Length: 319
Image (tube, rainbow, N blue to C red):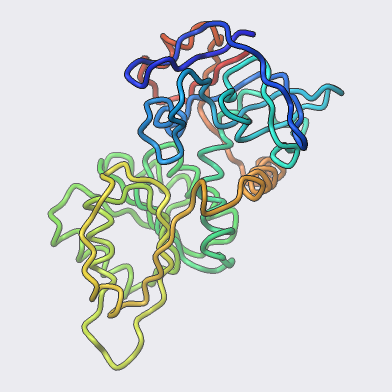
């Protein structure tokens, strides 16, 4: 069958032929129609994600859209290795498929599932978010961050703070639902002070962190206290990505002197079936939430060129 194939971690996937997968017990075979080139998939294909496979060759693609043998149109996630979503046929656990509503087209579904799930799962499955709470989206300028603002608002956030490196996106983020903007293009001391004003002034219940690295370090420092008699406010800090760096300094006193609760949301912290359930809920509520994404369809045969092309749109391979 035809597929995008990773033959080397040092080269982008190429279009070629590979053996079709065989369904194992509990699996279904899905005829793929669309699969997105997400940041997760790029990292996996380059061998740089903690979930990356180590055996070559393999087909990349964490999720996609397709049809079952009976014609049912489904979204599927985490097909059985080594055949990922960017192939004509995948084998995937039946519990990792969900029927697609008629109002959600294939390209939109493939494009929005991963970035939308990142915040929806972080809020509901990890932070146990409740309507009326406040949310800070750290790194809100990208596709996932912009959706995080819209999703937090849809789920009932009473106040949303967005951060980004470039201040010229502030108005765009406010238009999506952010109540306040903090620019990351300032000194660490000033950035820490800005975070402290929010944490102790207006209050932040949940942080959705797409950055880690230096910006997150300032945010964690801002939450630290000085041994006051009263307990510091509870802050559930959920890391989702590390666009600003994979590590940061974390003094032990920061945790002991604050109400911080550190956790992550991603592959391993939420079950595959749990993530698919979250995505199914998002699809069902997309219209009422007004969720949209800029996506562009490209034939699977053009995967090599599409992979190399920088784009602000989410590129979706049509199989």
